[in-house]
Every structure is written in structure tokens, then in C-alpha cells.
Length: 188
Image 1: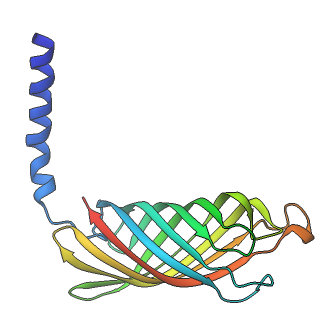
Image 2 (image 1 turned 45 degrees about the vertical axis):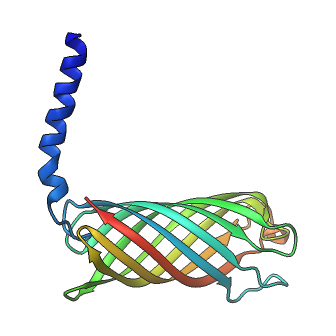
């Protein structure tokens, strides 16, 4: 019984101590802020076509931390579906990203971001490629405050997916894709 009372008292103390932090308004680029972001990105192959134009629908979840009032570091987990002429493929990836705020206005934070990564899929992606691929992505966009600690994120994203000739020149088709990135970010 004493153990249960001790656990409950500790939980109540943590909740009381954390309440002021949750109630504070946090901007995403405010030093010390951490946050989560969920997004969707319909992407279309724009050049370096592999005989077909393969679109992709990607969803992502990312975790961010502001290291200054201009820079954020994040890690993004992606899950996408590539609509290719062979059976469609599910692609999962992970990318560390750096986001730089180059301009801010009262309700908008304008940024660019970039980062490398790795991905794997259930089928060869693109066709005649491999299941393991490298990623590079870059975006330019803005974050608009829509509520306390909440931001709408809109960007234009570039995504490169390739195995970097890991299995020879004949097995290295790639994707060069672009599209809209729309997300919702919560800051703590």
C-alpha cells in the first residue's frame, strides 16, 4: 500500500511540476523548444525518368529540437507508397534534418531544410533498382501559427532516392521527385 501511495504522490508531483511548462506558449524556433510534426507529401517524379513517371504518396512523423532561434535539428521517419508500373512498393525511411529559419514575420516563420537518409522497401524501388536506397531531401516553406504551440507547415519538397551504384550501374535507377509538403507541428 505504501508503494502505491508513493507512486501516486510522485505522479501527482510530476504533473503539478509540468503544468506550467505545458501552459507556456512555445514557438518552434525558440531555443530549447522540442516538438513533433506529422505531414503528408504527394510527390511526382520530375526528371531522370526511368521509362515511367512514378508518383509517391509519403506520410511522415518527425521530432524536432530548436538549438537556437534560427536552427532546428530533427529526425524524420517516412512511410510512402510508390505507384510504379511493376507492383507498387511501400518505402520506409529515416533522415536527420537541419531546418534554418531565414525570415520571420508576425505569424510566419520561413525556412529551408535539408538532410540525407536511408530507406528500405518491400520490392525493388524503382523497378530494376534495389530494396535499400539512400535518400536526400530538401524543402523550402513556412510555418504559420494556428494555435497555442501549434503550427501549420507548408513547403515544397525535393526528394532523391537512389542506391548510389551500390549494386552496379545497371541496378541504379533513381527517383528525383518534387511536391507539396503539408504538416501539423506541436511545440513543447
